[in-house]
Amino acid sequence: PRHWAAPRPCRESFSMVAALRPPVSLQPRCVDLAIIGAGVGGCALAASLRREGFGGAIRLLEIGRGPGGRSATRRSRQDPDLLINHGAPCFNLRSSPSPQLIAPLAAAGWIRPFEGAIRSLDGNGEIVDPIDDGFSEGAIWQGHGSMDALCEGLLAIARGGETTAGEAWCELQGGTLVRQLKLRGEGSALRWSLRDGSGELLCEARWLVLSGSLLAHPRAQSVFGWPEVPLQVVAEERGDPQLLAAQRHLAGMSARASANLLLSLPAEAAQPWLAQPWRLLQCQEPAQQRWGLRRISIQPLACDRAAVVAESSAAFAERHLQVYGSRSSAAQLLGAKPPAEAEAAVLGALEQALSEALAAGLNLSTRDSDRQLMRWGAAFPDPPGLPESLRLCPQSALGFCGDALAGEGFGRIEGALRSAEALATQLKSVL
Image (tube, rainbow, N blue to C red; front, side, top):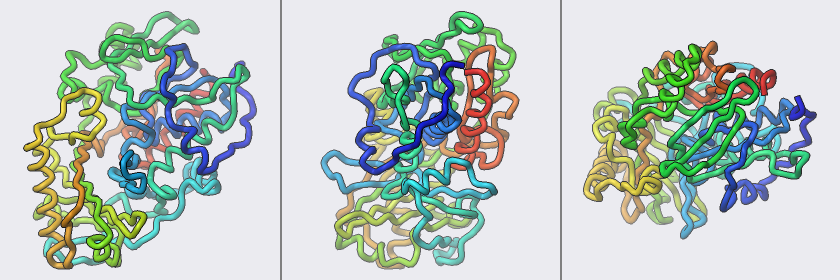
């Protein structure tokens, strides 16, 4: 096919970070591939396709301000030194060989081995040896500087050249919530149309990939109040048996939520935290039941400051599922910020739990800290994942990738990377 050619050498460098920010305005034109979701799965797919030699136009549409998804980093326009890895402080690879994208990311300096010890907290408040929690075994990596460097590096690989028309290989459209999907035409004339909540055309594409399950899952109705599930409407209109099966499987999947407390500590308060002999603290099951916390991370910041992220247990998050944080992308796009008192109550409960589990016994204080709430409604998918046989639906020009797909790494960043690489191999024969 005309869009496949030898990939040009990748020119990764940290100076490219600014260039990877989404343009102010992108015209709704037809691209070869649209990817909904610029988390690890979506960005890894774009990078894998480029490494496979695909030279067509790719556009990623992301609800957040930038790439990353649950591996994103919370930033502040007023405080450029504030970088909080609010979803994943690191990621692990439990099987060999590693995903193919790891080597070029590490060689270019986008990721590096995780620094800092991992320990666990038992039900008595004692800090003991680490446990097998599924997220802390094997080779452990982190973004260089911040976790969003992982997806920035993937996009640098995806943007490693220009099309013959001089256009960008890969465009990122942030702050965009896709509300409507429409598929028209047949065969090689198939076209996907993607629109926002007002019906405005965002993009048209020959092929579409969903790197998350939101548009296929009933939580689109419960979270956003939509009257229908967008992909279900398309599947029923088309009658494609494979697409219908994929949509039904995704719609039936459950997932565990996580409500995360984000603290930024001034230098004086940060020092006792930074002096701890661990950077990641797992909470054993008795500790989760007692304090409602799953994991705690300490993240050094510039100027001797620190960030502390306390991730809730699934049970705690489920009790507060409708409180998603006033600074979240969902709140900003929908203009439906939660009641201030509800958000304050969740923040207070998490901070109190952190204090009872850790702070008092170790003389750690959260005084004078800035507090934020980040709630992931579907942070950890439950098995079984979408099977390999439903990963690609050629009759509907649609594919799926991400950590909700069955296979090695399911429910983790490793799964998102591996599913993207596998889908890129399949797409090579049809794009």
